Image (cartoon, rainbow, N blue to C red; front, side, top):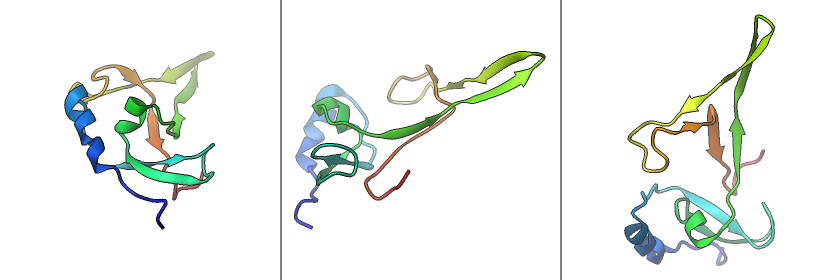
Length: 100
């Protein structure tokens, strides 16, 4: 499909902004999620150049003694993005080939 291509030259952004290359691509669409596919782009480059990315996030809640308590995830201190900060319990990006 000629509309699907990768942008390897975008790698200079990763050197300039000191962010990690993940070898995971997100699809960039013309208008909205699963509209006309323009190209695939390295996941980490999406926010750098202003592309929308889509994901699913989940947090856990429990009831205990009349209270509602929330499970809170915490990122590893060795993560390249936002190390050691609080985060969703479970989260993941949605690629073009995946349905929600």
